[in-house]
Amino acid sequence: MFEYLVKRLATIVPTLVLVSMLIFGLQQLLPGDPAKILAGEEQDPTVVAYLRTKLHLDEPLPLRYAYWAGSVLRGDLGESIRTQQPVLDLIVQKLPVTVELALLAFAIALAIGIPSGIVAAIGRGTAWDVAANVFALWGLSTPNFWLGILMILLFSVQLGWLPASGYVSPFEDLGANLAAMIMPAFVLGNAIAAVLMRHTRSAMLQVLSADYVRTARAKGLSERSVVLKHALRNALTPIITLGALELGTLLSGAVLTEQVFTIPGFGKLIVDSVFNRDYSVVQGVVLVTATTYIVLNLLADLAQFLVNPRLRR
Image (cartoon, rainbow, N blue to C red; front, top):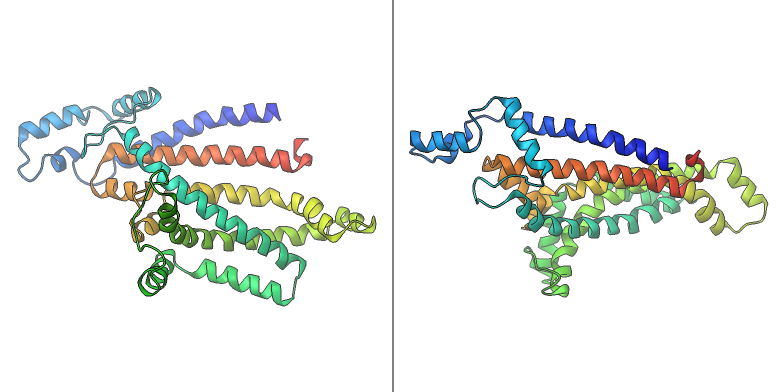
C-alpha cells in the first residue's frame, strides 16, 4: 500500500502542472482586453498601460505563466482585480459555506441512496425494487433549480416553515443555519442519492450472485450478516469512487442551487468572477477545484484498499 501511495503521489505533481497550464492557457482565450475592461468606459491610455504592466499583460504568454505559477507555489493566488482582496482570502471566506452545504447534501445522499440500493437489490423484482427505481429516475430527471423553486414555494411561501434564501453562520445561530441549509442540501443530495442508488443496486446484484456469498449462506450465517459483512463490503469499491467524484462536484460549487437560494458560497464566487472578468479569482478557484478532485480521488483509492483486502495485492 505504501508503494502504491508513493506512485500516486508521484503522478499528482505532473497532473497538477498540466492542469495549471490548461487553466492559465484557456483563461487567455476569453475575449476582450482585461486592462481596457478594468480601465472603465473612458479607457485612459495611461491607466490601460499601467494595468497592462501590473498584470504582466505586455509579457509573452510563457513568462506570464511562470509569474503566476511561481506565485502559486509561494501560496499567493493573486489579487482580485475588482475588490483588491487576495484571492486566497476570498476562497477561505467562501469555501466553508460550500463545504458545509456539500457535506450536508452528501450525508442526505448516503442516507437515502445506499440503503435504497441495497433494498432494491435484495428484493429484485418486488415492489420495493420498482419504488427505488422510480425514485432514482425521478431524482435523475428533476432539474435542481426547478426542485429548489418548488420547495421554496411549498416550505417557505405556503407553509412558512423554512427561510426562502440567505445564509446564517453556524457559529452565530446553529438552528437558523440548519433551517437555511436543509432545502438546498436536499436538492443537491436528491440527485446524488439517485445515482448512488442505481450503482449500489447494480454492484449488489453482481456480488449477491458470487460464490463466496452462496458459501456464506451455506454456512448458516444470517441474511443480515451475509448482506452487510460479505456482499456490501465487496460492492463498495465502485461506490466509493463514485462518491468521491460526486463530493468533488459538490465542493467545486453548486452554482445553480446557490443562486436559487442566494447562498454566498464557492459557486457564486465562480459565477461573479467569470462575469466580472476577474482573471486571478477564476484561475485560483479553478485550481483549487482541480486540486480537490485529485485529492478526493486519491482518498477514494486509499479507502478502497481499506475496504477490499483483495486490492492490496
